[in-house]
Length: 450
Ligand SMILES: Cc1ncc(COP(=O)(O)O)c(C=O)c1O
Image (cartoon, rainbow, N blue to C red; front, side, top):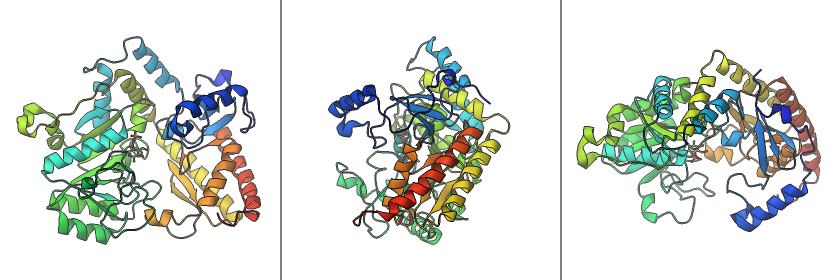
């Protein structure tokens, strides 16, 4: 079992409801300075001040098992000793240079060695940036403007990505719905949207429209939804046949579904992929990776002034971030890491599924071993429209009950970490059992308008 920095100073468990004056003061300060009193990430104003291994502590000292993992990056847990040592070592050598550095070059090589489509790598600082540039790269390569995405697929926060991520009403496919005010109307014309997992519609749309299409961007495992058998394979076949660039958004799945990502896990290799979260080891680092002939558009000496795609960023390839990412990949690349990680995820999913069945709740566990959640809906879930048919009040109430019982998770997902051990798994099962009882009780006095 790995010893994590911070384990020795654990303040011990407290009720997850207790708030100290120091946390209340900080929350008041946040209310004064931050819109909605938050950074915009998780909606609640909980203040997390420390993490170690599979656990985090809030400012009041309440302890939680962490299933948020910083929205995914902390795949090997907080303060993993090897990651901390690599970061500390780099900190004493300088923190940014805006120049090639050994850590960044070695991380690029590790990505090329691991990820099937990755012949070349370009670093950026966030998944949003990586997706934005991957789409621009595909448009420049194809000399065409249109991008096809799938409803409910998340590709960051750019104007191009915030289309039909979480629409609240239906429009006919392939029309997109912008998810935010402030996005120019003109961008809608360059995005087409289809339902995830509809193989026939996807095939006929690409056949009919390939002359306009620069790329298809897809999360190979869309949020919690698995690709139906043949969906990714057909997408690969038809894009290869028509020359449309296939981009896998592996910001979540990269180094999580396997060391080579979802493309290795599903054995389907895209032309380009985007990576983030785990490969930055908890620092702002993400990447575009892919076929050398496409990535060469970033190289003026290869493609000349007219085709050269200018791309740079002050902190791209930052050495501290790269050191953290490289150390994280080294931890993940040890024997049996994924076997054990998947076994933990499977155990958690099965335990929760069985508890929900026994409680006769209208619910199912959706996802895969590295990430999953409960959807309060009994029907089959193949796409975004199926997921929103889930019962939002039950989801919100259950999540609140879990937080009160010491499980820290986002609204839509449990992220599993390799740091989870026996004690966390059994404590999680206890929290689920108690929260399910409390949920059944709460359902009896459910507000009529919820
Ligand atoms: C699939 C996917 N792509 C892109 C992003 C955006 O990444 P970032 O938050 O680093 O901008 C996310 C973030 O959660 C994501 O889940």
